[in-house]
Length: 260
Image 1 (cartoon, one colour):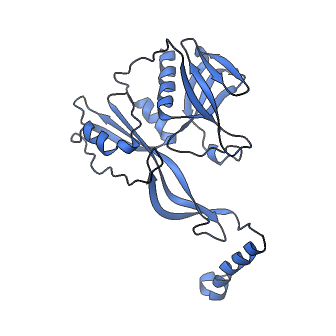
Image 2 (cartoon, rainbow, N blue to C red):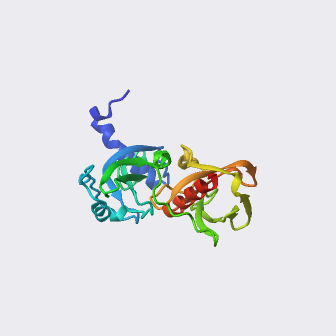
Image 3 (cartoon, rainbow, N blue to C red):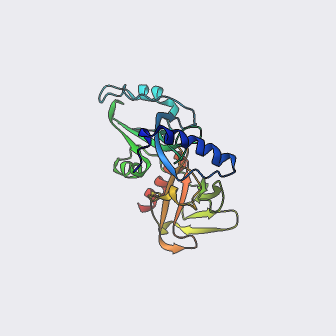
């Protein structure tokens, strides 16, 4: 093994070699490697913002304080005993092996969530910071309080993002929720799925965003999930898609009411 640090000539030759390769039209700088960078956070609107949760005190902090201090990440859930905040954070970047420094390195962002529950007197009962893969299980463990049943007298339309195969950006479809069925509408196809054929939803599988055919990126504006069917449909036995947080909560409630 050659100790580059102990060989100034070699160490100095690396950036020179990179420059020569680039000037010759050879732009491959090796595989991407993770590097640590100063931590940054962005709110649900994509604005860089510092988040501080030190004010949260069990049995002391009021809901009003939570709503005020965490307004930039509030997804405004209608569940009275729950606050859900969402943002994205980054402490790593991906850069070419031969040039592991900015500006060639791009930050890796990951959605984060905070779930805060309240006592009946609106004081903080508990709080927990979660990644998306743990969000579903945490929400399932919470007892919903004072949830108004979905009004499906007029079908509810949810816009969803889909994985883009061979494209650089996701393409959209619609899920239309009605009393008897869920309707799927895409540009060139559509079908109705009996409400009894809906089995449940889970977080999008591990590795979804590293799949070469999956061009969407995780972001705080979308929850990526897999909708499972009891029987096989024209979509297969499941559908992976992204919904905004209100749409995600509506679909969860729709499935919960269907099981009842």
